[in-house]
Image: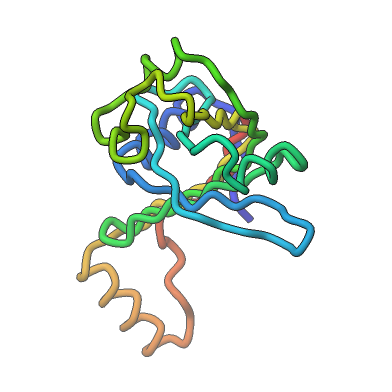
Length: 166
């Protein structure tokens, strides 16, 4: 069972683990079930909210309007870091916020820039996150494998797993 924390340092660790991943899988609810799609986060810093851009009228916006709860899944296999973020999403039409979050990479989808009328922002207010911060060294993996083969027991210290509430 993962330790549960609401400490500032643990909240910041969540940001440290996800800030450079770039793409999250955003999972929404539909009448048919769950639906996930890759989304690039726009945040330059983190205060408990994550921001994404979408085309106004996209199906995911209808899904968010109907059910605000979303899950964001982040994965960095090279460093063996994994984070799931649960939160409440809302659709925001705010040109000022769009300018604040804007990067030129968004121009591919929004050629008119941050004032593009097709641009809608998705704000996810984070409720909780769970992370798995595992050792990524091949030596540690080999040690764990050898221990399991020799003792029949899995290794005990496989990194940090924590649930963080916001």
